[in-house]
Amino acid sequence: MYEKTLSRKTVYQGRILSVDVLDVELEDGRRSVREIVQHGVAVAIIPQLSDGRFVFIRQFRKAMERVCFEVVAGNCDLGEAEAVSAARELREETGYISKSLKLLGPIFPGVGYCTERIDVYYAEVSEQVETAFDEDENIETLLLSEAEMDEMIRSNQIADAKTLAAWMLYKAKRVDF
Image (tube, rainbow, N blue to C red; front, side, top):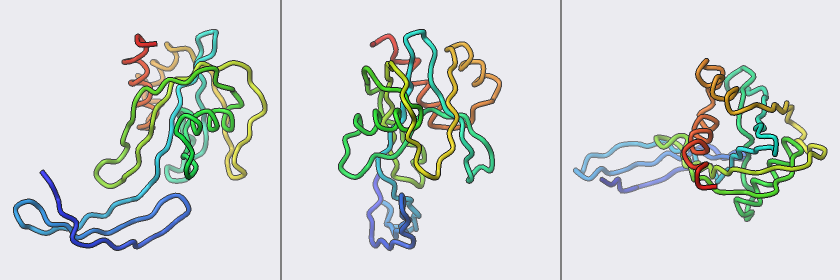
């Protein structure tokens, strides 16, 4: 299966994303239109303390008009290696320093309309230093056991797709650590 791009027009260019409208030709010759959100690579981190608890965050998300419970995550800076981004985001959002990072794998949050790829990492973390939030962020750090996290998922307290996918990757691959 393949779609040939006949034309592309950027209809919006923002700070972290752009929107393109593509005219495409399907394999059977039919034509269609695709609206694609162009977004760079991002990272998500499942940080774990030496006592076994995991570090998560809560923050208000305007798009959802609610406080969301999430895995630590953020965009990679231009030219920045993903592992470097993961360590930076972890420190900025939580104040924790990673002792080790292990790539669990990529996730693609919106394959029907968005180019975003999020590389998910597991991090063993040590000391906590002062956070360095972006000036427009207000983030609360939460520490949870594995059982508490699983219960929050079972009781629908977590709806963020990247957090659910990242936790699933952690659970599926932790035997490899």
